[in-house]
Image (spheres, one colour):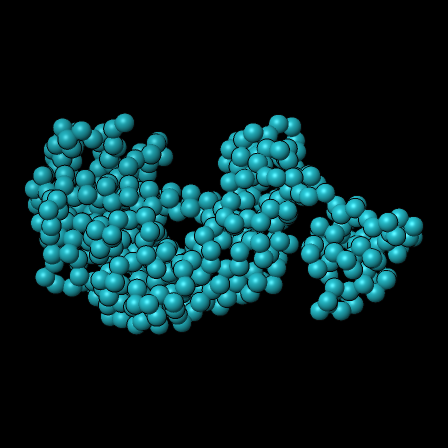
Length: 450
């Protein structure tokens, strides 16, 4: 599809000559001599870029800025009005070029502006997709450990301090990092993610810090590193414990002084980034055995967020599963599925070594293979939970109330409230009410505790 330009120039000779040149360059060009004509053309259909003279019979070309809705505008001006053109850029113009100008120079400026606009549009699209994939306002968790994480995010996010997120693989460390960025003062700036474990050791330095042309064999052109790409934004280094010692030293320099030296460069450049790091490894132990720099560790170990494994927050499995199930059905274009008692029982009985990531993958399998309106327990690919313990002979003659008392006292140290209720064949609310009536409180919980 051809790129469409609107050329707003009141001098007919210039407008026609410039229009003919741009048409030969492959653009579709629409001309206008006044702001009124330009507005009529904009109303008739979208354009990709506007070239506007600063001085027009009925106003200034920059008056269109408020009406362009993100379409870039390049100001055409005389040398005497360069100061006005700079002022126009502060109002939102993409760039300016002073008359008389070389047509080739203008063509390069148009190409550069369009390329920049496409990159920005792509970045916005990626941001939207990222927010859909990692919806920071829907972090799910009801257990005390997760409520503590939410409070930490609320307090830490507005600061510029470095943050270390610790937790097993699959616990949601990247989601927490995105939440910190989204609620920070840098939320409109880039969020750059680097998985340090996925980049070969011989490439990680170039990927992070960039390189100059000819810095090493194969460096045929200059490359900006990921740290520079995160300027004014947030850099998330996942699995930071995998960084080689030499790269750790360079990263420390960035954190201490904001100084970045690409490979092969003779001068440093200054960057302003907020670092969020994550790891499933014990960095303190790595410091002791010499595989992680102590000074970098202390730079990171100021604000630490610990994410609990899923097996330690079993009360969150049901709400997490419901949330993930709804999101997966929407993403995979499948009708909504309910999570029945049998499927939930299998989820609750599983130990989840892969944590939330494993839970999501398990539910995705069920959504793809499922039929009907409810999750088929067998489609989860999990073992069925063990059968309820057979009652002892003495219990056969007990009253229902006494049987309830003995069952709860016998198994409450091994089962969650949800599992107890399921084994007894009652709702969790009924279990709570009977506990209150009989004075059967879990150890460490008083009357009225849920």
